[in-house]
Length: 165
Image (tube, rainbow, N blue to C red; front, side):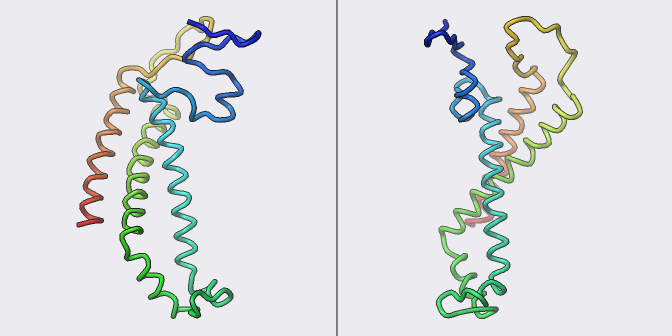
């Protein structure tokens, strides 16, 4: 049940402090939808941040291109060139990925706000008992998580039809 590594004892479902601190995504996600949602929430947050930074750079291109011309174009002369590049298939796939990230991150964020900030569906606190393993989701919280996954997939399919249709 437990693995021995030197003097340290590591439970199979709870990795050591250093392993989970350095790379929390290495924690097992098999049969653990809470962990899958946690990892997806982090990944989608990074995707949204990267899109935001790229969008700011693209929107500000008439200004920065005056100092750093691109293909001999600067200012508003560069704008149609950038829009032509963004009309390609690669950027549509990127839009589809960003849409999926936003469509998961938003409802999962609302679920997290309801659960962690307002305590909806958490239930009564129990007495702490060693070895202080945190409880998993209650049935209501798990149903909300599954609802988030279903809403995400349905909305992402609709977004794909809009983007590629």
